Length: 183
Image (cartoon, rainbow, N blue to C red; front, side):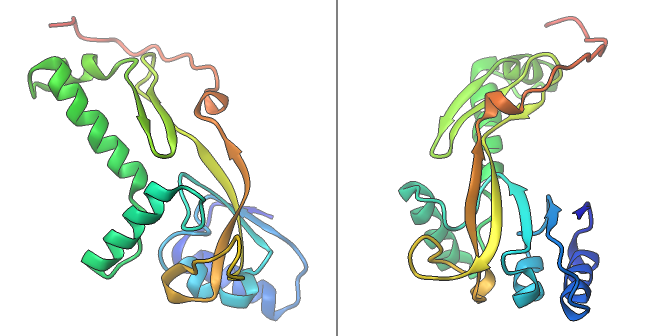
């Protein structure tokens, strides 16, 4: 089943399927976000597949350290790696534009590429779409090997099923945005 449900609707859908013994998998963008995976519990195990820019069980040392530091500082889950790259790209565009003027920054962002711990991130110039690696991940039990970390302290963890490179997510665009003149 493909669903765009999230939050409470997502968790209730998966839990109801588990209680009624409906034998389907759920494909969602939001299945591994705050509150969802830990609340769905056993009903989600090996049945919920999500797409996201990061997950706790990636074998990337810099991300493991960032997650640990974030949890130590804020006592909360770390889901912000993509936001961190967005802020880094904005800062780089401000530096490149030598200005905080929105129009100058927007033009400085066009075509910008940054290399982060997760891979290359690219701002497509045609439509300012941020392209980054994505992961197809499955919810499953923590096993201490490839699934070391649970979400929100639960026994529900994530396993990479597939990594999709940023370039492979770039579908053709026909953006016809009228652009203001470059300053």
